[in-house]
Length: 166
Image (tube, rainbow, N blue to C red; front, top):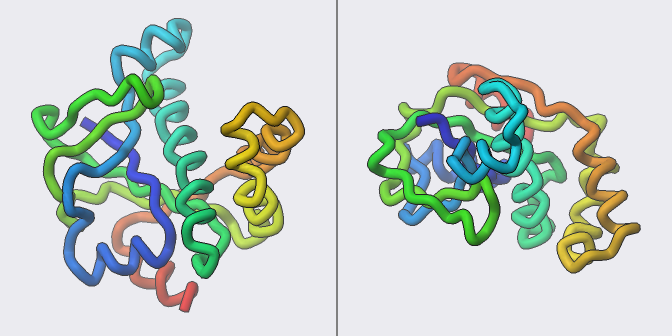
């Protein structure tokens, strides 16, 4: 099953150095039955995009908790055994927990904001808590960050991506 792990550059670097993401349980996003029901008209590609977008929004919360991290959303796409995934639909339609650590070798790709998105990401990080609380103006700011596409990086590009951030 493809899952999307929200992270930050410092967390990505730590996982690469350790050889895995963990310890479990890991909060991630995936195409779940609840997401399929909520997004009934979506095809498989649209459902995967929705799960990835939810992970990208979670990155804003992670960045708010780590102000020293570069202001760019980082989502790691990984393939895990179905048995390792448990639903967390009480949190969100696409939310899941992983019962195991994820080996760095299981990473399929990394999705990252372009540097030009940093100003909008900073603004969204400052607004995400208020947006979560129902503030419409803050939600508009967060939505502005989501207008930026995440760029795809192959696994062999992760080291160079991390080196660019140092």
